[in-house]
Image 1: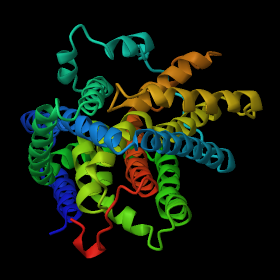
Image 2: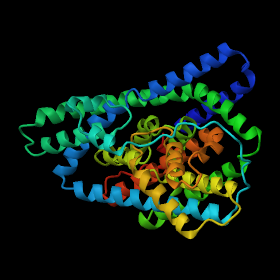
Image 3: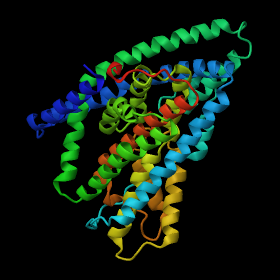
Image 4: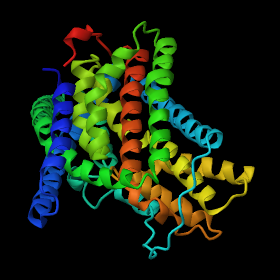
Length: 409
């Protein structure tokens, strides 16, 4: 059975369970919440060891083959361009289609979350390099340590051959463990999907947020069904670009329900290797870096969300200068959300509301009840970008062995 079918079945069973379980029972809800949290922790258990060891091997092989600069160049070109495209799509869609206003309610002021940029920079260099492999959320910390080891181990291949051999074996070991975890996660999706659907049902019950959700959905269909396949078709000269979409189904399903970019990373890497045929020297770099920096989907949903809030508070047209400000700050801040793998979109929305001022400091409370679906769509956009983007980089750097679609996992 294909992996994406297993995840889809898990989601369907979870949704059915939400209708069957006695949700008014406090014990049932506590158990369901516990299981969901347990699944999230279980799924991320192997992420850092996998990313750390694979980064070492990737950098070593890229330096040896003199492909480091080309691979990193293509990776960040695609990250930046995809972020620009998604931010513009979000802006144009919400300006062209005027969503219904959300009724203003009086809520208590919630503490505004922020991003400690100085703290993120300092966290890249902990007191001991070995602390880097203990960082579970901001993957760039462990990646940087892996890059240093991989780069230096390629400088004298004979002297450091034992180091390379050790981490190559570790990378393969952790990959096999991660593959096992991704299979188990398809079963655990029942608990995650059940917990997710309970909250989602509450969001759509009032109908207030339905137009916003439909806009997210339409933009998503346009992006993965038209824009990204066209880019693959003309940039990679691939006659069947939808094969990348097919390989992305399972990661996108997991990303939408979990809302956690780090949780999806092992599944994305597995599909990149076993379905798309992306070599480890490339996937070990592209997938983690896309997961950290390619948050254009977050920009898209935040732009739509903030302009919807603005129009809910005012019947006037938004000044052009403010539109440009919203676009630039959403785009700029999206690159520093790597330390927030889950919930980063709503954090960014609170920052924009606070920074904008003019009485909008706590206006994000209008969309707080819909934060789950906002984060879900932001994550699924970003996962799709990672899958399509990694494929582009692999093709342009010739680090791919194409597989027939019937052999996709």
